Image 1 (cartoon, rainbow, N blue to C red):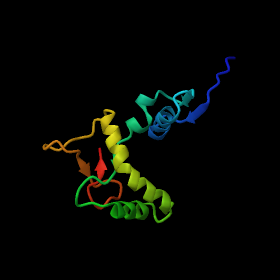
Image 2: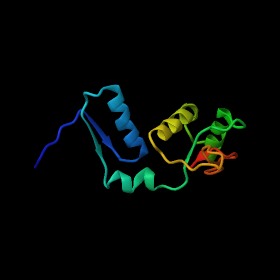
Image 3: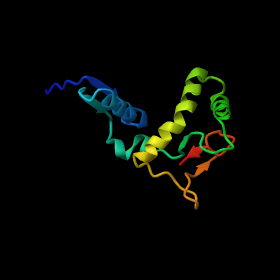
Length: 127
């Protein structure tokens, strides 16, 4: 049996797992990293999910409304500090994904298309 050794082991090849691997590489490129997944990441996980991801991008939207929709959508069981951090970071991370080549849907004017999805009261879900 082969024994493989890595500095960092990430379990799961979905969006969070792959983003964690990128963060490790950005933080210390000398660390060896393994991402362990049951199946090939590009054929399952986040890339196979329908729906999209929410982030404030429109002028008529704001972070407090996004946080409220997320917390209410979670039946008030969400860690509200984590939700606040998420809604603050989401626009920056979504733009980063776009710069890395994520093919977001577009409006005829060329802006990122959004829709009210997943309990959001306004159009803030990128798809």
